[in-house]
Picture 1 (tube, rainbow, N blue to C red):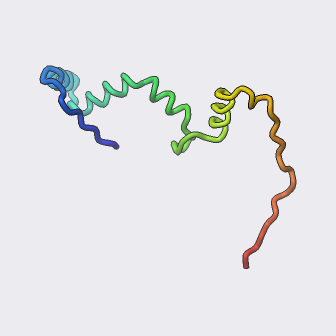
Picture 2 (cartoon, one colour; picture 1 turned 60 degrees about the vertical axis):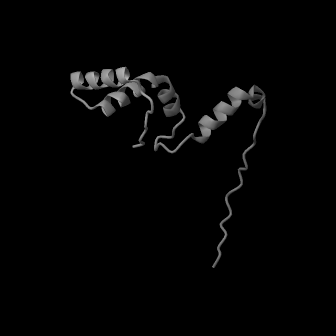
Picture 3 (tube, one colour; picture 1 turned 60 degrees about the horizontal axis):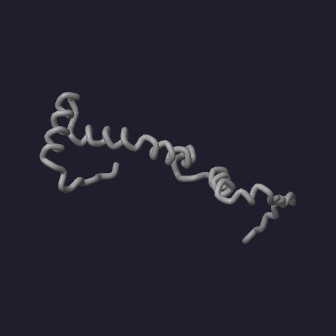
Length: 92
């Protein structure tokens, strides 16, 4: 998990965070994480939409869809596929 440092947090905000954590039986760090995740729900959903099932980033289909959204003229183009069988090359 990544670490984050928040500098210059006001004393009032710090006390409110600690009070909230105590009410919920958690730590201030856990409460801060909960607050950030709640505040960033839309951004987290957008990130998740662009991730592959294994969490490694945007898949080809998503990338192509995004390109087509940005450049609608791509929808008019045809990209023929090479249907010839793959050639196996041996390096022995």
